[in-house]
Image (tube, rainbow, N blue to C red; front, side, top):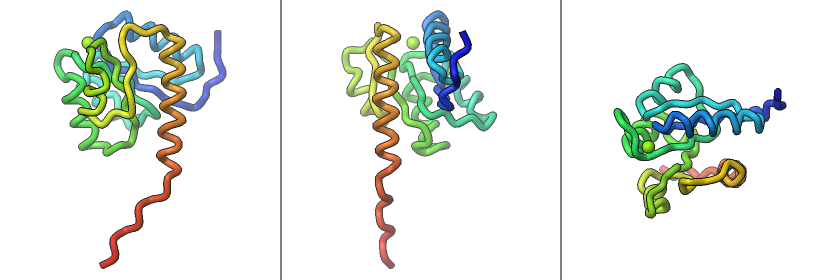
Length: 140
Ligand SMILES: [Mg+2]
């Protein structure tokens, strides 16, 4: 199948190789361009090539550079250029998302269709945020 590209790029960061491939194939079949990395450091390397994704799906527990470390470095280097959605099996998913200023979270295990629905929801959320008027600059 050769889906019509929807012009959106997603970076998926997770150390579970099979899950990474499954998500990639599914989202590609939905028209997304998908980049993958198996830890935060690898993800920073992918973005060094100039790719800034529309959305990042981020696992938290990973070797080399985990989700917390990645989020810190990403926010420092790229500010809030791409919204982050946390992928986690932890019971405190909401807290984990808040910890790193993520736009939301998806609890593992999930089915692919519900993952896609959440991605679409978060896309609408971040589009809305982008439409908000900028705060007035302080007068001197
Ligand atoms: Mg993991």
